[in-house]
Length: 377
Image 1 (tube, one colour):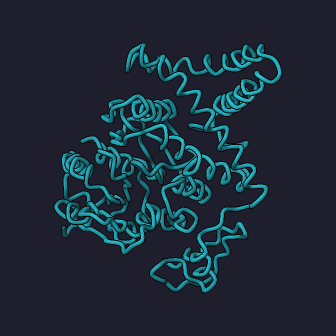
Image 2 (image 1 turned 90 degrees about the vertical axis):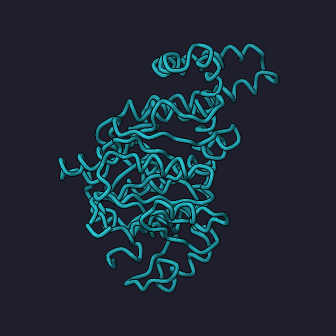
């Protein structure tokens, strides 16, 4: 590809053999002319043939030595090699629609004031099972209901002007060496430099992820819930964020679910009539979620809707536990620290591995956002 592309599709991949053929076929079916976009796969130390498979269709495959460094690190390396004016981040288990890339390109060309945008999963997730269908459709519903200006960013299928991405300091690969809230945190920094971020529900993709109760709990607690609460407290945003999962009604429902569960646990030791109190506390959760349940009934039927109601209560319980743990860790430990090796690199003014000289030092334990690499690239 000799002509400079307008879009650079950056895809981090690790052990992606099972899904990569379908994902790449979806990209190649895009209705945006091929000369207007490039496709870069960043293989994060996969032990299998993921890089060889990616090389069949990608314009470039960047192979990272082990051990795996996580999607934040991989996306940063891809962005550094990209030539496009706009970076489009797509996860390796996400199939774009034929119109996805074209709609991103049209959006950024028509609206110079927009610095970043992201889309939505569609309402046809292929992974079987009630948990997979519930989680993927729940994500779709929230994004469909919250189009317009956004307070954060989503990297599953999101795009950023490359200049703003570099100005904001890229993904925080120090604090997030594994899949976590690196896209959310980047969105906060983008907003801090005046970048306008929008959610466009019509820009859609298909999520191939298979969910289980186990990885649902791990994601909502360890990977996203606790880190997100700690980030909100660290940046003093807990009372100001009002979009997507942080609407007031969602916060209230999370608290009610936690309180109701505690009352239920106390019932055998205090008074069995407390079970009715748990039911009363659950009533507002049911009423505020009637539009969501109507969506599930319309999409999957009444039986499915009834089956996911306890699962949705479990979702709120996970949110309550993660919020509580985040609050405790914030006050007991403070800001999350990167791995010890990362702190050692920061001490000598190194912001990347392999090392890249920088102008200053980054002190990750101080809460400072003065990343050492900012302003050097």
